[in-house]
Amino acid sequence: MLKLTGGHWRGRSIQTPKGLSARPTLAKVREAIFSALGDWIDAAHVLDLYAGSGALGFEALSRGAGDCVFVDRSRGTLDLIRRSAEMLDCRAQIALRGGRLPGVIRTLDVADPRRFDLVFMDPPYEQSLVADTLTRLAGADRLAARAMVVVETRHDETFALPQGFETVRDKRYGDTRIRFLLWEATPVSESETQ
Image (cartoon, rainbow, N blue to C red; front, side, top):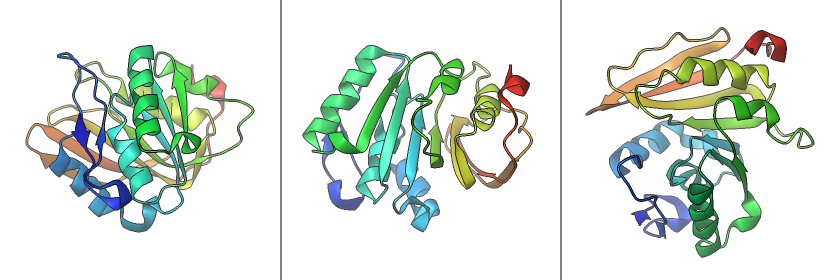
């Protein structure tokens, strides 16, 4: 179990995956992220990629986000997120999408026209997934104008920043590095992301 750090569910717990591959964002890092985001969260459409426990998405909902889509490849992990949402009585505010990232981004509910204001991305470390995920996210035309993308990596992980993204904040917390990327470009076509 993991406790939420702020908002109207502060101190409430959510389910967490078991095993060595589970790596929920530390409480002090979550607090720093949401302190930096400030009003960016209010009524935001949120996308939590590589969701794991869903801690970042649930923190956003707790602090006033409108809704959150959680994406993870593990059905078991998505079931934990669903159970957490039921415990917090927010099932109507979430959607769950399964599939391998970054490829599954292009299939995110074609019938759902919403664009995301805030995206959290915490891919497995040392697998070089960040640049490809950002490129596919931009190409899917699902980012709102001036969307914020918060990327968590190991402190020493580097990646090429795709066109249209600008780093507006870059902070290290121990072995973790958090980058805040502002999306300011006209979306690229899906064919350019393949």
